[in-house]
Image (cartoon, rainbow, N blue to C red; front, side, top):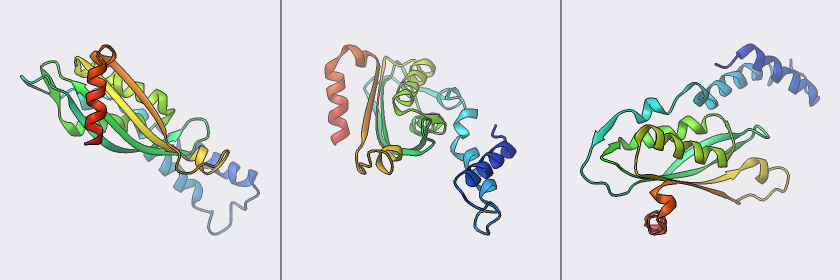
Length: 185
């Protein structure tokens, strides 16, 4: 749970620290707006992926399921700046599937935290393995990090790609190839 008063005080101190007048008309309500924003963008800290992955349906078909182009927004834990992009999540069912929106909701659970892209990729894969118990999972995340594109090296348009494989995806290069082929379709 976000402590609004602590966030408001931190924002007031930050504004003073960079030389701003916290009583200036445009900044008077900024600490409160920032506190509400952090409650929204860090809301995944209060969520558990199990609540989204627990509603499953029995199936006879155990072919790959791929949900691609799941847009997400997250916040870099190193700079408190946004990174955003797309997640692609595939799994091989083991007699049961989950509703497709639940994969997107699982991405959101981990994106709405202070985060590292590489860690988030693994967390999504691990949650699906734990709660859905498929034969395997593969997650690919492509993201642009504003901590790299608008500050520091300043290379806008550059994307970072991270991959997590679990289960049969680790053992079967043909499944990985099929995954990448399906991404291009």
